[in-house]
Structures are given as structure tokens and as C-alpha cells.
Length: 218
Image 1 (tube, rainbow, N blue to C red):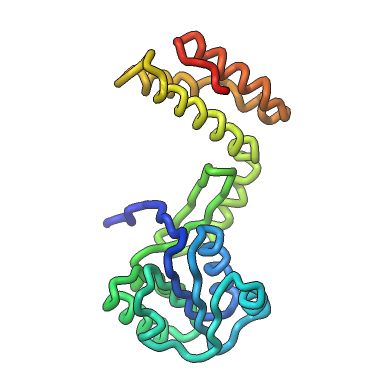
Image 2: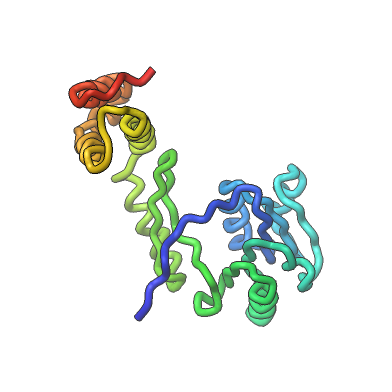
């Protein structure tokens, strides 16, 4: 049995198409917008949430049947209509044009799946079931929300600052950099962040770096 190759796509300013205007399509649209994609939606009937996004100028909406011309030139296509034959036809058009395609009601006919995600700043935790049971993935995400609080977003920011300092310093190079990064990640900063003490956490991190000859961040 093979498993999907998990990647994170950069969709900023990429032309993406969602076909369908219901609840499932709406979720897909919002996820694409959060990734910075340029989203076109084609739907014979669009829900109020989709119409509102169009009224706000967040998406381009065409309320009609989809055609092969709508797919042409798109980087990514999501077929989320309530008709499987239509979704399958859209998938064929997408592959012919070189676009990645997700068929909402058929993981077997999809090039990719959209995982349930937990976002904490730039930290993303993704839970996927190879498209077989999205509801289970969402349930697991909800369970993880309590375990991974918003402090993890700040934690990542602090560690990223440390990474930049380490790589900018002439004091370390090669394998020593990786050892320092591992040491920084092993510092017990999360309790301070959970107590809303980011300044103290930063002080602990900078003291660790100073011990190893890394200059203080400005």
C-alpha cells in the first residue's frame, strides 16, 4: 500500500478554481483564500457565504455551469459540486490542462487531499486520512487544540529568531549549527509562554545563545 507524499503548497497569487457553491465548497474556498490564492468560483447555485465573499471582492464568482475553459490556466482545481459525474468531468479537464485536482467526493480520483489543520502562528499541524474520512481528521484536530495552545506560535517565532542568529554568526558553522538549534529547541520555554511571559522566555533563549558565542538579537 502506498501513502500520499505530504507537502505544503505555496499558493500566494496562484490562480485556483473551485467548482461548487455549497458548504463543502465554502470551506475549500476559505482555506485557499487563507493561503493567498486568487480564487475563481463557478457554481450554478452559491450559498450566502460564497456570495458574500464575492460581494467583498475576495473571489470571482460565476453563477453558471462549469466549462473546460474555466479550468484552463489554473494551477489547482477543486471539484465540489453535488454531482459526481460533473466532478469527474472537471477532474479530466484539470489533468488535461496540467492542474492539480481534488474531487471532494472521490479520493481515488484526486491528485491531493486537504488535511484538517491546526494553525498556531506559522506552526501548522495537519491530520490526513488519505481523503477517506475527513470527519475523523477534524475530530483529531479538535482533540489536539487543547494540547497545542497559541503559545506554540510564539515559541516558533522565538526559535526562528534563534535560527537566524545562529546562521548569521561566524562563531559556528556546519554540524555545530544543528547542535545549537537542537539545544535551543530543548530549552524549557513553553511554561513561560503559557504564563504569558514571552520576554522572560526570550531572555532564557538569548542567554543560551550568548553562552555559545552568538550575539544578542537587536
